[in-house]
Length: 208
Ligand SMILES: [Mg+2]
Image (cartoon, rainbow, N blue to C red; front, side, top):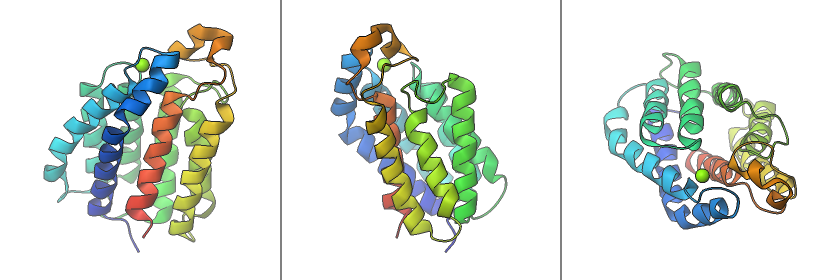
């Protein structure tokens, strides 16, 4: 079954809901290793996104994703706005003018978004960033989104969570958390946590 603009809008709305619910949790994670604004920033950005969503439902999926990206870049300060904004911009660009997406198109779009995040944030694997949650999720989608989308979405959500947990013992080498040096070890990375929520929302919105 193809993925439509309405499906993508449902995903973005669910992600906005869950970021709002996780606002205090993400802020607490960021207060341990950063400047305590990650939950606030993500909630602010996706509240703004929610306002423009109704006008995007009738258009193309690529256009919706690009507008989400631009809204995030213009409303969210800190590192997370430009990074998530770039993810959605590249995701949308990858879809071009297609009216619908296949599972394979979704995997390609997520990979394009991840490549954008890496180019923008310059994070290497194991720097303890959102990239360490997003990379295994993208790989899970690439391995089977074309054959079994529901299973691929489940695998991607699990891979993101596993990536988030795998890097928790590591010392952060990017972003504010890196200023803490060894004291960053043992803390959950806030960006990896919000990326896990993204893939869980994608699973729950599209994995029907
Ligand atoms: Mg912060």
